[in-house]
Image 1 (cartoon, rainbow, N blue to C red):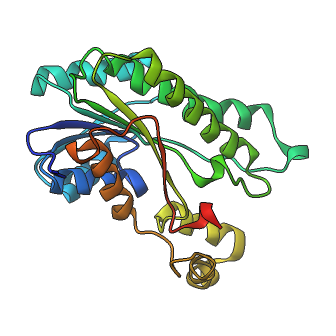
Image 2 (image 1 turned 30 degrees about the vertical axis):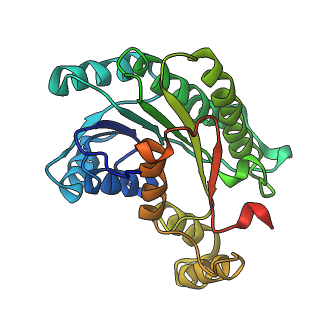
Length: 253
């Protein structure tokens, strides 16, 4: 059993920060050449520098098929291969039922639904037998908190995508799985807590969230990275179509 990604080439969307950046760090540490995508070159440059010399960044909007097609062309030209894709880019627009707007609905499902399709679909022609796709889901797919129906619904949709897609690609040798985090200690989480509760309450709020978890804490982004490495490595060679909850047990209680 090997968790090595030595010699493999991976594309990670939304890789300039948060969970995506944690995944990029762990893929690089496992030996992969990593291409991260995001919306701003400056953020990509900073992220790639932090990950190391085996990481490069390409500006792309996952909701635009032409952007993702261009990413894979550049990957093919630069590396001559593609072995792993992590469809991580996502957003959360939160509102209770009576306040959801059409703009929120369209943007959430564009990024979290169409963005996953446009990340995976054009990659298939490059992925060889043994290639892998990991789609980042969320515990909100099964336990959406109040006010998070759009986010939870979009993450439930990608679970259905993957369960159908593994049948569509039968015989290709490509595996697809979903990795669903719970609360992860990212800048975006802390920013959301600051807006909701005040900057001076963020640390306490994070501690409270952790105390409600069976592990007594919330996750670090690189823990999501290590789970994604497992799903992208030969160690999971007979695992496909699953939703792996990397949430400290929250989905089970």
